[in-house]
Length: 88
Image (cartoon, rainbow, N blue to C red; front, side, top):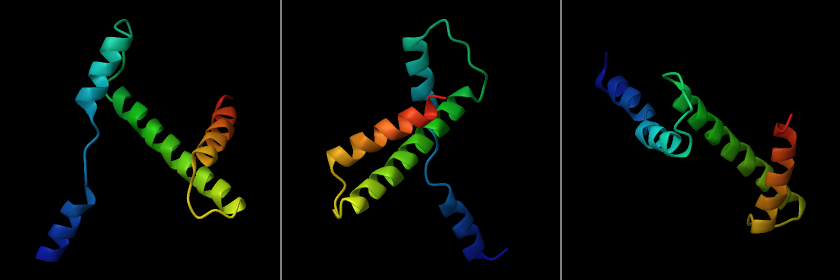
């Protein structure tokens, strides 16, 4: 294996999920809640996906209003749409 291949594989993992922080927050907020081993990772993934969808929708709102900068109004409108869709 070449050195460049090893370096490129190491660069792919930028940062780990804050598992300890998430577990502490869960215990503090809901001490009776029992999660499986990877439950905190699933919550972290859902948060990342929500932020990604929020950024995409906000960018779409900004483009529709012919604005180059995403404003607070764009984010709030996108949050309403995304939360309404995810309600189920």
